[in-house]
Length: 594
Image (spheres, one colour):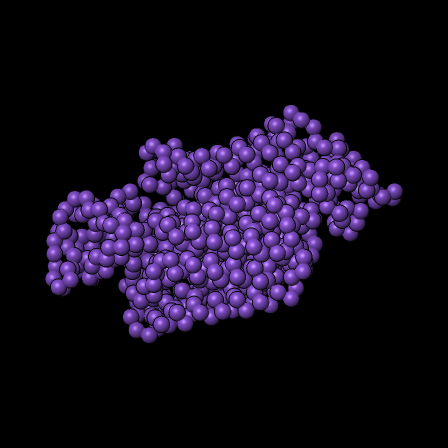
């Protein structure tokens, strides 16, 4: 009951703020970028609220429980990506005048085909990122309230689509800023309470990990998805009459929906293909995927994907278009680094406590719910229930805040870039896209949320990161080069994911580079763009397009009109120059023309 009462205000406030944005909704610009009037501090809070998804609020701690201390490299990559964005992307993207990443692609290179391909990439990233948000909403709500999995999925989809359809980006901004503060408080306060309540014995065990080998008391485990367990000799379960019953040693295929109570002191079965929490290497600060023996390669794979992927996430990039100018966009990125750094101090606390208090979650693949499962382990009274409710409310805020931004860019890709339409069509696209994501999330309970989110980062790193970096900083990039590079990055990453899911059983460094392909797909995309661009010639108006990105806004009054087509871009480059040019413009023109 308390958990339901904790989630209800989050849903209610989200809907009310959505209603507030209705009055300001008149144009496509209002819907997608809030008329470009969001202040840096508000925008940075909204960016942080949008970025702190289920993977951050729950997933990092769950990965620590399952895979060890090396999982803390994920938040390092998440935060460090904003430093690169601050230096290379934030201000030029705002000066471009674009509404979306596909918008920028066409404005910079004058290619409608590139715009359509970029919109397809947005849809791919959106699906990979949105499905785990809705999936984890269903999982968490089912764990703490025993409601069916589909209830949380449908609830998240309904609230997000209704809020966006009503208020667009302006509503999303206020919701995400509010929810960042909400999540920060509801993440830090329970962490401090857990450390105090757990006691010195648990804290000592948390920093001196040991393998999870025996159940310390009667432990009930619900298998929401099927699993294959290797049962050791002596394992017992408690049957319905309350007495112990020995399990047959060997393989045990547990069907989905099964609830098992393991007896106190019984040996822990192992999940095939999964390392036991606290086993050898758990405390090592590197990521050794599936114990393949290449921890440094695994760590670099995650860092490359998360750092460079952050620079290319379309829902994050769109946030900078809501800034009044390039300077405000840069300040937004700087503030965001500080805010995220505070939040990411705490997932490790939940992770190491989870390995001690709820290690059995690894049996069902539900380590994502470790954060909300912890309070009941240290206090089975009112205080534990209250903190469970608060953490659940914070987790639901994480799902909603991230889903708002992602659903916005997906609907923008459909109704602004692929099939251009007005405000009514954008709203319909929001509702339709949410319905599709809900249908995809319903059968996705067995997928690992962290894996899907990392794949989304990998696609962004292999497509939009090269497009933005070279499009902003290299005048010789051509439309053909950008098309080839984005296509190479998209095809190589998707192909790698398919091989990982449905291909042969791989081992060693090959298995890591297939499961986490960023170390080779990102260089492939960059190299393809450079080589193909070198074989052609940049458009004659490329210099003017570069000037628009790098000169301060007050020098760019002749360039306010964004090129909508190839011919418009040529006109911008040749006929829009004023008769009197500043000395700075003349110097940059000569330098770029070399």
